Length: 250
Length: 274
Image 1 (cartoon, rainbow over the protein chains, first blue to last red):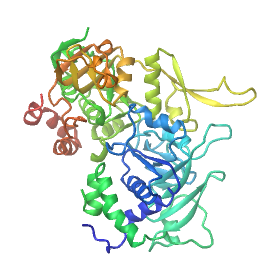
Image 2 (image 1 turned 90 degrees about the horizontal axis):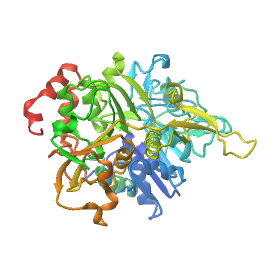
Image 3 (image 1 turned 30 degrees about the vertical axis):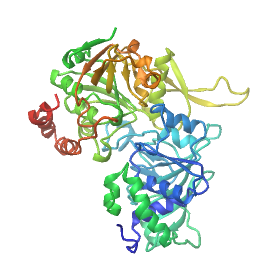
Image 4 (image 1 turned 180 degrees about the horizontal axis):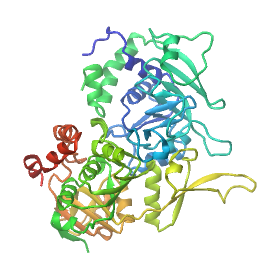
């Protein structure tokens, strides 16, 4: 059994911060390589009292899709997916994300560092109303002034069809909110033990800092227990290595 | 009619330079057939991933069999970066056509319908448009008058070959693929579909109302070959899991070209699944 008295880890704070962005939604989809968003989605579902549906790519028990690989994207086109999660090897202050590689785009396809690729980002970022960005590495290398390759842009010119876009960015240190009209992040809260200066030092892009920055709320005992038992078991179906590493479950 | 062939004869139908649609790791990969292709020394393949490339793409790249990859991503998932792919990008030895999952699938669907292109939302403002000169942006001709509505056009894809692995075929050459319906799209769009299966059953899936909706009719299947454990080591849904140890071994070995060559030629582990 996981220890409910153990301190809340940085990964758990990320899960809780993401889950806080998912209240009141009907359907959340979770893409490839996303155990932390997947855990947050499961937690939000358990806390929703049965109103939230969660679809996890790669899961057998938690996927409604029967029409092959296009169905997830078709479902998003129809406005049936309220929230999705994207990351990036680079993310800049305009919420542009880079999943292709580091280096001068003129040299493409050669790159100093090659990432896997854009996956569905160049589409889902446009059509899912609430995209939560996440990164496990809060450094100037990842959170950079300008991405080398835009897999998917944070904002679009007027007239471009764009019902969706970024809403927040969650890191191991803090939660940023994104203002689509201004194309800019604001520091919304810092996780326990992290200072505003520490966030500023570790972030390569400029962002707004309100006069008072609250701490990201820590979970009550019941929520933490739910996370470390039920959610740990649920996410182990798709991400057994993650669940073992994080909670010793799976 | 669908031909029933040996695996060697099946892959003999894939010429050097062919464009070849290959599924993602979770969707039924003809791994034994891919190793046979590598043994044969196939060259200059144009791989079209549906929509992401995994172990088989990394192996083909490592073997020097690939000239070009069109994919939304190439990754070994939980096992990490695709080492031979990453090395080939760094050295500039392969051409890369980066895409995004639904666009790649929509191009195949356009190919299936015999259309020249398909309009698609999103993408505008992405650097994918800079590296994909075959993608074009036009103003939506159906928009209300006076309204500018830019939209991307993607060319249709008709691969020379679709190659994948499925649980079973019937005596008529119909192939059951369950919910992995992108395989059906690929078979429809491709000039020839070559499929390896775990077994051939004495049945007619099209006459069975439970099986028929998840079945590719033999109308679209040019040839099948029986390959037991044909998706080893990535595994096959509804049949057997991934061989984690073999995948871990591959990932570590393929960090170098020499390690890759040793892994792919290793008679002990590969022969057990030939």
